[in-house]
Length: 235
Ligand SMILES: NC(=O)c1ccc[n+]([C@@H]2O[C@H](COP(=O)([O-])OP(=O)(O)OC[C@H]3O[C@@H](n4cnc5c(N)ncnc54)[C@H](OP(=O)(O)O)[C@@H]3O)[C@@H](O)[C@H]2O)c1
Image (cartoon, rainbow, N blue to C red):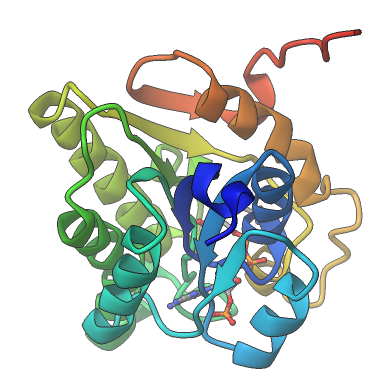
């Protein structure tokens, strides 16, 4: 292992091939983190991360226990995991259906990816004191938007289980972060055929996330673009 690799802090981030996950992975890698990332589409993941120093890409589905084990093994071989970003998520279907048309299979899949997998990953990792967990949520967790019942309920569940984790593990920082609307594939899937070019790029949500990750804010719920971002120091 090179000296640079030995001194990098270690993070696990799910859904790192595009959108918010890739934007945050780029910045974490530039800031000296080793980041173990995943996504199901292996070619897109490999292409997106090929030029990023310190990024280990492991294709797979977060809902698959064997894949999560590979993420954990890869990360822990690099050192103690200090940051987990549960970012990978699914809407279920596009277009978004009303609650009565969701169906149990789609609802189960939404909860499997958005709630069960993040919680299972944390269980597999058994983070040491001082680590930070970022569970990416949405305003759909607290607002009742037509069509967003399944996804919103899953994010509400993720938020609540995060609050319980924060009580059980006061030695961790458990940050529930709403990144705000972003111009991504997921957002386009939520509004099929609509022009979403007025939504900010995911990079707009990254400074707030980094400020939280690097900061001392306590466990709680945050809105990424409302977080105060420190001025860059002038040397
Ligand atoms: N976009 C918005 O406006 C918005 C608003 C509020 C909250 N959020 C939240 O922000 C986070 C990022 O969303 P985004 O808009 O950046 O999404 P995105 O651009 O669609 O990217 C999602 C990423 O997650 C991966 N992924 C999805 N399902 C996965 C699975 N089962 N296993 C492993 N990887 C998986 C995707 O790759 P593969 O498809 O190849 O697996 C991709 O890398 C999500 O938690 C989302 O709920 C988004």
